[in-house]
Amino acid sequence: MIAPTPFFADRGCHKRIYEEARELQHRGHQVIICTYHLGRDMEGIQTERIINIPWYKKLEAGPSWHKFYLDLLLFLKALRVSLREKPDIFHGHLHEGALIAKILGWIFRRPMVFDAQGSLVAELQDHGFISEKGVLFRFFLWLEKLVYRLSDRIIISSHQAHRLIRKKFALPEEKALPIVDGVNLDTFKSAYSFKGLKKKWKLPLRKKIVIYVGILNHYQGAEYIIASLKHLLAMRKDVHFLIIGFPQQPYQKLAEEEGLKNYLTFTGRIPYTEVPRYYCLAQVAISPKLSISEANGKLLEYMAMGLPSVVFDSQVSREILGELGFYAKMRDAFSFAQQIDSALRLQEENGDLKERLRKRAEELFSWESRVKEILSIYHSLNK
Image 1 (cartoon, rainbow, N blue to C red):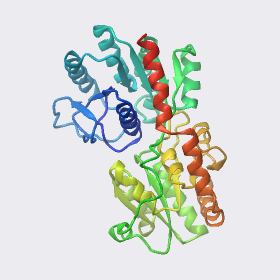
Image 2 (tube, helix red, strand yellow):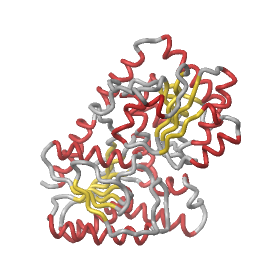
Image 3 (tube, rainbow, N blue to C red):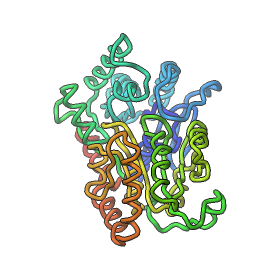
């Protein structure tokens, strides 16, 4: 696997990479992940890293001009590993990873699978890296088209992104397939003790905990967490937000400026395997993500933990949560607060909601079923 990212950094894309590799290995396949110098090694996963670049320390999601030379170094690392291991297939994550994987596929005469999280151009626009006008937009649009054309198979992490990408780039049905994110049902279950966590983080003992887990930035809707809390406190005072993510400083400062310091706790980054204990503290989970096409894997964790989830109304969210979601009007903080209040009330009144959420995760979103689909693609390409 080629992962042009600081794997592992406890965020959505990395969770998909890790869980795919873990499940493939569980089924007897050797997986090697080639990635950047940053991040931490995950137990049981063979990881090969580029040389250390001391001035590049970015762990959060988003584009960077540094990635051009980082990806060149990643290609050289993956080439060296491939010469040693002679892989049967190259699995490229993200558009840059797919391009590297394809070049290696040419060299070693092996097929390449592109694991797409969404549209490259849409992601760059979400992060404010490019606008719809200008040379950069045209260049990245050309590059995205090229990667799709060169890929032997494309697997896309949400049905909505699959529809948008297939339509925009005129991809044939047999080449681009939706394989949506899954959830590790053995890890995410409401059977953990959270003893000591409330004391550690000085959480109020008698208040309802509303949890957010993930990257904190604009396209994840982080500012709406703060804005919705302000509206929610006008409706009820028995709530406290627990924010697990990074970078936390800008939003911590915003909360203080809004006079909300005593109603939020920011933990910073918590290791992926520790997060389920924190979920057990909460009554409701939130994800005010603004992207209308990119996958939203945290919702699968929320659902597996039996947590009612409040989201902005998007096709991606509805595909995951179905009738069990709490949907606010897009970019409307007051509507988001109303839905949090509704979720808290229903959670108090409806004892079977937790079981229904868990059952949906078990029936529709296990990684075991997802990897079966990936393996069928591998086998079809290696005939």
